[in-house]
Structures are given as C-alpha cells and as structure tokens.
Amino acid sequence: MADRALRGSGLGSKSFEDETGIEFAARQEVGFDCPNGHHFDLVFAEEAELPTQWECPRCGQIAGRTDGVVAEEKETKPPRTHWDMLRERRSIPELEELLAERLDEIRNPDK
Image 1 (spheres, rainbow, N blue to C red):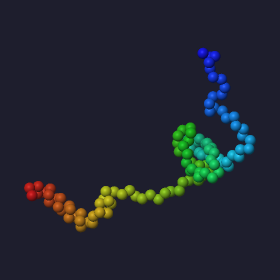
Image 2 (tube, rainbow, N blue to C red):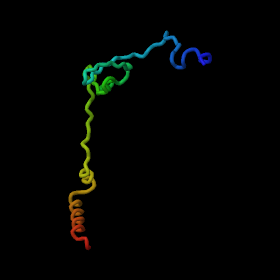
Image 3 (cartoon, rainbow, N blue to C red):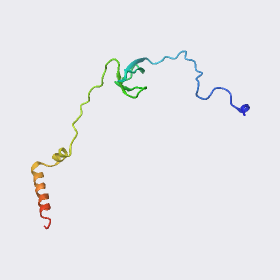
Image 4 (cartoon, one colour):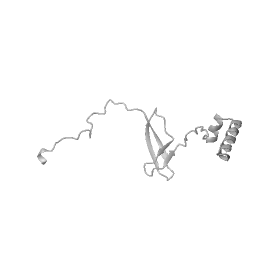
C-alpha cells in the first residue's frame, strides 16, 4: 500500500513563488483591549476604515481600541407606538366618534 502513495508536496499547502520584486501593501497595526484585560493587535491596510470595536479572540467579549477612539453615536428615532401610528391616520374627534359607535354597539347588541 505504501508503494502506491503519492510523493511530493500537497496541493495548496506550499507556495514555491519567490517574494523578490513584490511590493506589499502599506499596513498599520491597531491594538484592542477587552473588558477582561486581554490585549491583542490586528493588522489592517493603510487605507482601510478602522473598526472601533472587535471581538476578543480569547473570551469573545467586545474589545475597544487601545488608542481610545470610540464609535460616533448614531441619532436614533424613538420607536413608534400603535398610538403614534393611529394618530397619523385619525384625528381626536374622529377617534371619539369611532369610540362612541363601538360603545353603542357593545351596549346595545340587539340593534
């Protein structure tokens, strides 16, 4: 069985290209600290938009950047309630009229 085994390097395991003449992209290293005290560094391209948070590879907590850069707070709208949506469609007098009609139907089911 060993006589028929393929010899040589595995497919995709090694690159035989020479690195001479190759110009690598400019890089920058960014440090992150997680709430559990772990520190790790990640390498990004020079022109990449840098994240302000990253998941810690050790514990999974969200880590913030070491240099103190934080994400900008996005302006959020307050959630719309059913009452808000109803008020967009109906006025108070219309709602009072509908309420009176429904109460009349409930009080006098014989009609």
